[in-house]
Length: 529
Image 1 (cartoon, rainbow, N blue to C red):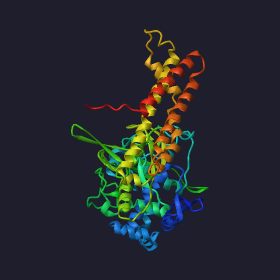
Image 2 (cartoon, one colour; image 1 turned 45 degrees about the vertical axis):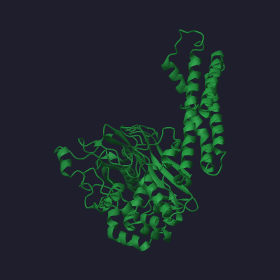
Image 3 (tube, rainbow, N blue to C red; image 1 turned 30 degrees about the vertical axis):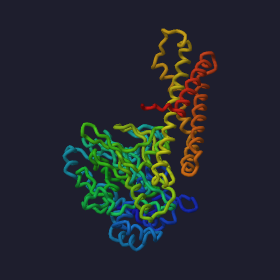
Image 4 (cartoon, helix red, strand yellow; image 1 turned 30 degrees about the horizontal axis):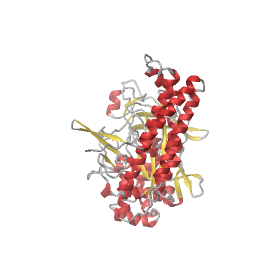
């Protein structure tokens, strides 16, 4: 039986319209109506990010831009020209059908027939179907943990074509490497997908058209193409031929097929559904590759330079890294290509925004391991004056350094609390030496560091927006830091209890915190003779 689900005209992309309603639209409709849509509306942050990457690739080929002048002409229209989209679709429509027998979208129609597949398969064996849910890191299947749901391996999960299309796009951009059950037994070592280990930076506009445009990179700004024949995967006769580990350009990167997949659709009482597929490792990039959508820092050791992408913290407080995000000195880092485009557009007067508004997407993972703790989408908005005024930027850095210094003081105070709770007589008996492991264990139990950072978020953004015009903003920030530290220590002391040892521990901890706060807000300046 022949199946068909063409992404051009089927409704599969979740969007938020101007009335804040969730609607599902076809690819063609999303591009034509982008100026009437607020944003994408998928359930998972990394799915929204992957869909946005895909839309960037699609708009880049339907609306090719040579330089900033081309960008300005297109942006001034306020919407994407429909004729250009129609012309491209007319030429490539068959490449967007999920179940096309020759060019199934984002899949490998030669699965099991390639030379390496035949070599890895014994003569009597065939490729083994694997569940779609096994590709998802938030679903329980095989070695996947039940971190995000409570399903089990024996529970079958069916997906309709719209869901499968979104999943295909997501896993190509966001999947972790490691040994994983595959359809071809000997071919089961997967590499990280290109956007899986760092934070992807997008500039956010007033609507979907505006957002796409602010991230649509003209050819002259493509820093990885170097004149190579770049293009999206669906235009290639066989996207898996070139496994050099190098991206030919931004389009190749945006649509890189990190997994070889072939869907196995079935006709059910609910229509076309998919629960299984063939899967194997696909294309990967060399470890030294610098993803231009990341904020990349560089470390040099004995002449060897390593790339370190900006990552989310486990506590999820993005504003702590405001100085890194807004830093334009670039001493040991490269800014995201999207932020660089924003700076160029502002400098040329093509954008006149008083704020830079960022969408930051990624996963909190265990470095080097196939372990994921969270999918993350953070918003970060800041006045553009921080990008232009170095003195003001240094004031902001000072405010953040103060916060880290106070946090350190809170750490020492809470450690004192834990230590005296366990050994209340340590200041009286010289021979008593607190056991570091026991103290550390109690500290982990009573620590209120997350409360400290969380309670400061509102005050920080008040500082961020008022510092350019209010001389008293820094003093207000100091008061907020002191209050947050004292409240966090108080919460920890409540856990420690109000018995004799708990009360003594509280008194000692408060003394330690008072000293550390005086030290933070009144640093002693050494006088050089």
